[in-house]
Image 1: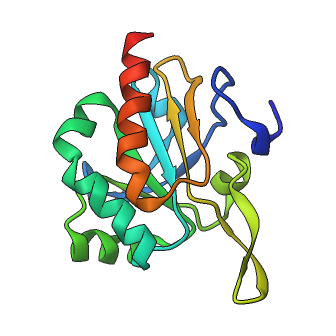
Image 2: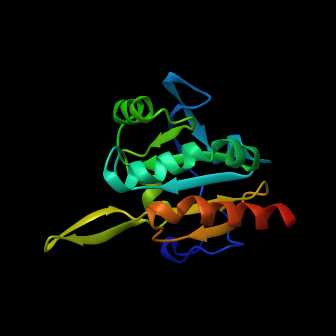
Image 3: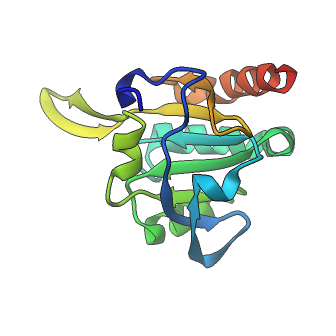
Length: 166
């Protein structure tokens, strides 16, 4: 398995298993793994924290493009927030897609997005806003690192459109 921080298209997607809430999953949540999604295009978009300005912009952009995006892939937002926080975020913003609770930080580590950040002169660890498109074969089709919230949907559309041709 490659170094998670250098994952690139063509690499096998790191396996994962996490609780999904929202979208097609019941309020109580259900464990979902990469194995469950074989044969499908999957988008994992990692974001720092529920209900913060940038994360809300990103999530609502996906919500507003849901009719188009949902026809191309199964989409999962991923953060280290718990399922209760995810349910509140989904309800507040009417998000149509599920969120994965990565409270043990295995997914952010496995995808190389748990990184050192600096804000207001303080250094801390947090999730990098990055998106991974996984093909039906379980291999990465696109890796979008350090995505800007308001550019995410357009970048994702392009990545998914390219994946449909291959």
